Length: 103
Image (cartoon, rainbow, N blue to C red; front, top):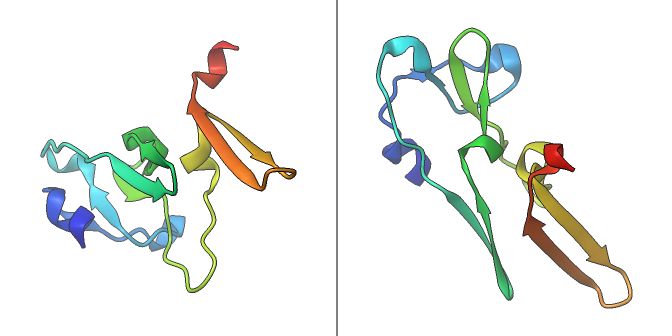
C-alpha cells in the first residue's frame, strides 16, 4: 500500500508478464521510486529501483516481487549487485553492495 501511494503513474495490467503491481510508463508521467529497505537483525538491505522494478519492452514497469503466504524468497532481481554469503558454521547471512559486471 505504501508503494502504491508513492507512485504517481497510472496502473497497468501485468498479467501477461506474470506480475501483480504494474504501471504504464508510456503515459508521459515521470515519477520517483522510493528505496525499499528490508530490516534484518543487525543490518538493513537497501534496494535501489533497479533491484525491484522490472521494465518491459512495451513501456510497462512492474514491481519484481510477488506476495507470499509463509516463506518469502529474495529473487535474482533483489540480489543483483550484492555479494551475499551464508556462513553455515555461524548460521549467519552477510551482504555488501558491489558492481558485479565490473569484476
